[in-house]
Length: 254
Image 1 (cartoon, rainbow, N blue to C red):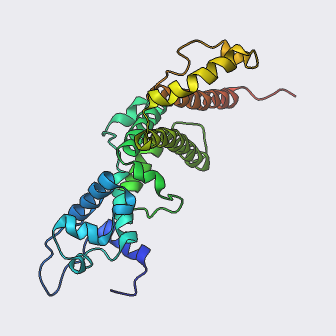
Image 2: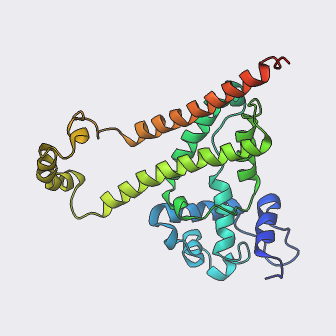
Image 3: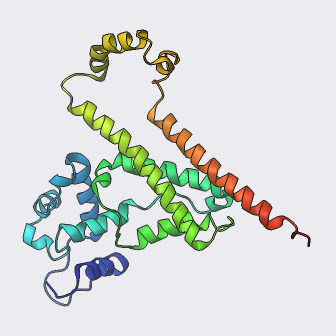
C-alpha cells in the first residue's frame, strides 16, 4: 500500500502497466488476465458478484496475493471500464464519412452494452481516462473534423449520441431483465391484458390507438434503435447543410 491517490494509481496502471518488481516473487498474473476475469464474473453473475475474493477465486490465487496487482474493487473497475470501451472500429474506416462512422460507432456501443449490461449500472460522469477510452474518443472525434462545428460542439455531439445509445439500450436491457424474472411468459402477460385492452379500444375513448395497424407494437429493439439513430443523424445532417449554406452565401449588400 502507498499514499498514492487511487485515481493516480489507476492511471499509472492503465498507461504504464505494473511496476517492475525489485524483490520478491515475479508476478504470475498480468493486468489483462485480471481484467478479463473480472469481466467474466460480471457478465456471468452481475456487478454485485464481482469482488476481490471472487476475482481471486476465479484466477486461482489467494485474495491477499491479488492485492499485489490491484488494491481494491474501485481500482479494478477503472481498469475494466477502460478495457471494455475499446471499440472495433478498424483502421481506415474514418474515410467513410462522418455519418457512416457515427452510425458504426453507435451500433458498436449498443453491442457493447448488450454484451455487458452491468455497464449501465455504472456512473460514467467522471471516467478515469486510460488508453482504451482516450483511443475510442479519438476515433470518434476524428470522423467529426469535417463538420462545421466548434470543438466544444463536437464534444457535445459525442455526448448526445452516447446519451441516445445508452437510453435506448437501457430500455431493452430492462425489458429483458423484467421478462427473465417474471413468473409468467411475455405472451401470457399480454394475454391477461388483452380482454381489457380490447374493451378499451371498442369503447371509443381511445380513437387514435384503436385505429392503429395490428402490427404497430411488433417492431424489434434493433429496428427501434436504427430508426431513432437515423432521425438523430438526420437532424445533425440538416444542421450541417444549414451551416455550410450560410458560410457559402455571399455577404449581404448595403
